[in-house]
Image (cartoon, rainbow, N blue to C red; front, side, top):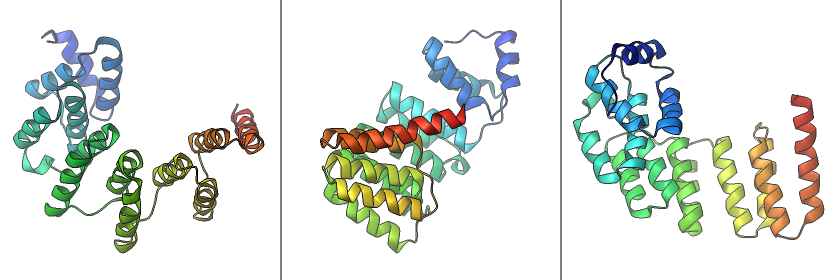
Length: 222
């Protein structure tokens, strides 16, 4: 556990809630005690916590202790803190781990609780099905269309990667062009994903062209 010292309290209080999540990430990298830190701060009631802070704690608990401990933590949260962002954090964790049953249960629970469908939640499902069952991607896209949910950069990146994994290079390129037509400038990570799939498909020249574009953008940024 963390030391109960005035020095610790002053340092953490000075962080403020905005830097809380980032601060816990730094602590996790250096000391591996971010979960203890989060519990300590809540017990001491030295900071004003928000639902986003609770969402960060949910993610940490899931990574350190597993889903059963997360369920217990959420039950103890004040009702005002059991918001969409808290459940979305848990959904994101399950999706990244490929826990299909748990992720689908959380998504359905969010719907039953009356939370609006968001691009973030749908993108987490897309990320899940990219790993576990690509046939279900179409179902999520239909839901997004029905609910008038606009895709984000993250959404397009997942779809591009899914097409590349299926060796559907034409489909991957079409999604890339649709992304640009929607007014989104593809980020470096998206282009690197495309270059990777071009290489795997044996399209070395196309991969080189993408890498040259990325190199030019890096020079402009310097």
